[in-house]
Amino acid sequence: MAFPLYILPKRFLPLLRLDKRLDFASYVDDQFQASYTHTFLVPPFLRSVRENLNNHLGDILPAITEEMSYAIHRELNSSEDWQPIIAFEKVLRVIGLVSGRVNVGLPTSRTDEWLNLYIQYPIEVFSALSEICKFPKILRPIAQHIIPQIRRIKQIQTRVCEILAPEYESRRSTLKGGKDRAKIDTMLQWTWENSKEEERTDTFQSRMQIVSAVPTLYTVSLAATQCIFDLAMRPEYIPAIRDEFDSVLESLQGNINKEALGKLVKLDSFMKESQRLNPLSLASFERKTKEAITLPDGTFLAKGSHVAAPAYSIGHDQEFFEDPENFDGLRFYRLQATENNRRPMHHYVSVSETSLGFGYGRHACPGRWFAAIEIKLFLAFLTHDYDIEAVEIGDDRPRSTIDQFFIYPDASKMVALRRRKF
Image 1: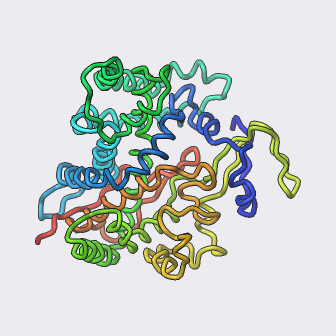
Image 2 (image 1 turned 90 degrees about the vertical axis):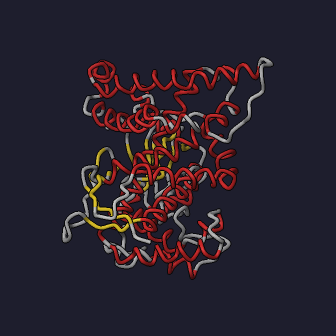
């Protein structure tokens, strides 16, 4: 490993939660080998998530709901007979349509070319990361030229720039006094507004949009696929999730709003239990030290060190969770019933020293509310419209694989769907 990595005991997390000597962006640059994979975090994107996306979730929820319904009916079978699907492949396409509508908007997000590029980009990024890390650091500047995934990343970025160029040109025309254009709530619009003048180039803006596929599409799809595997292997939870959704729809006359999603507490619990057992990564709270730090026990962290918390281990620790190796889809539903509602600790988006699925502290995932909406709507619609089962009854749950700390569901495994009769 090119950087010293320190796995922090849980007791140090509150102490370091807001420590400005720990930096997230530079850690991401190192972890994703940004100079080779071209995956980076920039202020306009983060600002757009925190200040625009999060504050407009209620406003754009009707569009998200409409797109989820469209995506499911477009991508999943309509047969009332059992049909196998490759779970991760289909989830990528459904979530790709939904997150694409929020990122770049219609009609671009529904075109086959955009969707294929949008899906393929994060796949190439993670594959390139795995390949480049096989080489010693000193050889990576040379190795990058022989890794096909890196070439494909550049090709995708170039084509995305060409597709989105008219969008940026129309905004420049407006600034120069041209015909005013109706503003649509999309990340494309928000990142443009939050960018400095020198950042309003086609290359910079389009790269932000395609890089956003990593957090808004790929990681969401990984989590949603884990949930599908858990549903397929534990169908006894489906009636409770289905009944809860039907009850909420009936109470709100079919209106899916933030209040409705907040009432899907059993589904929320199921999602969090799936995340507990199969998080996105073995580690969380990843940071890079901007200066040397000495911990209270005397541990010295040199400048430039990486630190992280053992998210997977904490989630499987019987000190924090009863019977931690067994899946209990209503575990957090019961805990929610006993918690202080002024500071919810057991919701899917909640973060704490024992709930690290979305990070922790100053740089906890700012887009987790949007991710939760995507996954919750997807699973609610899926269980409402379809029966789900494992392709081969009796098989163990598909095993996840680990690469560079990342935890991946088996992308080759299938589940069977059957359209419900109403």
